[in-house]
Image 1 (cartoon, one colour):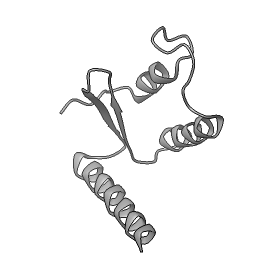
Image 2 (cartoon, helix red, strand yellow):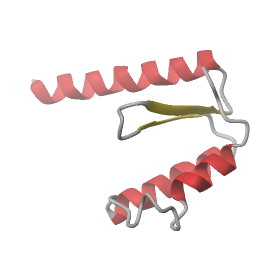
Image 3 (cartoon, rainbow, N blue to C red):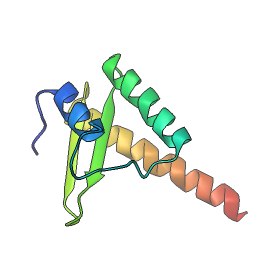
Image 4 (tube, helix red, strand yellow):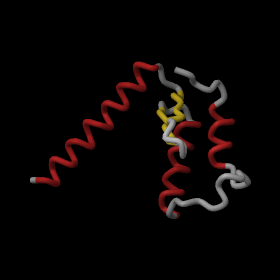
Length: 91
């Protein structure tokens, strides 16, 4: 599993408004604000897992301030929380 050494460079390249492959954001303004708050948390030292699916369906991902085990634990929490929310809405 490859993880980049410089999180700032990765995040800047993802959010660079001059990026040729992204002329305009497809995110709603509230999603842009939420993404900005998440990036601020990561820059502040919070643990994170970032996953992006490319057009060819290949996944690019990175862990920030977390070990692989911590990253897997975080993903498990996401799945568990999502499952609970889905179950609550079905009842």
